[in-house]
Image 1 (tube, rainbow over the protein chains, first blue to last red):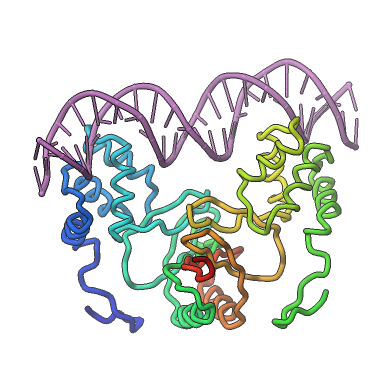
Image 2 (cartoon, each protein chain N blue to C red):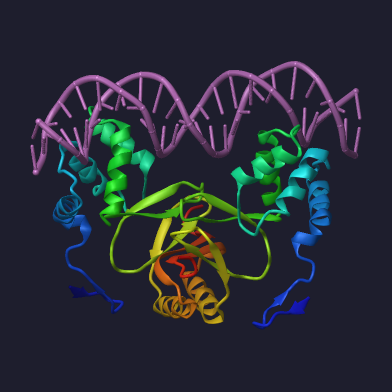
Length: 156
Length: 156
DNA sequence: ATGAATGCAAAGGTTTTGCACCCCC
DNA sequence: GGGGGTGCAAAACCTTTGCATTCAT
């Protein structure tokens, strides 16, 4: 573990570098098998930009491994999500679901309505308020999505 | 306007009771027309439970008005969103997009991962933190989604 | 009358599935 | 060898679109 500027901790081996071990342990524990195609899909997935569409992943896998079928990509992504390595994160400005590598550190997202650019941000006060609110709900919260849709001011 | 227990104000005529006027003004202002099918779709939409899938709406419209085609339902929902009467709100536990009647008062959602039940909540501290965080981003925020996925403890 | 709105059916796009074959354990 | 995994193609879905027709203004 190391401490980030913002003060919170993050495991030093994120799934992005550590996924092989996590995946193989998950597969073993579930009675699933380590196979070539699934491994290649994972490899491509972890090389994607931080937020990606499954559509893009399918294309990239097909480009690099033409013998792997789209069905396998879909099935593998599902497995990677179950293994806790990937995460359906948010919907971009056109409503398409994006995936990201599941990191422990908490962050929220801003999506530009105009250009689709995605920004991550971390706000201590917001996080505290969220935790407090969740606690008061007396539900057993597992995850949450907080996405802000806005106009970014970078382009044009 | 009247004041709610939590202290915030809500317009006394929500779209739920007032939609005809709002819709007709919107249509006029955009050079669109008041038509039977669109009106019927709106009528059914505003009778739906607070969070509904478009799939359910299509079925209900077909049931009550078999002469109205699904395409018209889709087109009408788009119009109602443009008019500010409906809102694509969140995704339920299976990833399906839900619509709700657009109310002014701000609330967030809890979705039960197991049964799909949806709860609304309003938390003053959270809302303040959100506003503050958004402000500090120096984006021009237009909307945001905050959904908590949790296990509810009501059933079984 | 004129152009928006509709119904129908077809097209488009995405994701899932059935099944025979393959190959990891 | 047995059962999970894969590729392929078809199916299943969901949503949009083209077009002729209808209808509001």
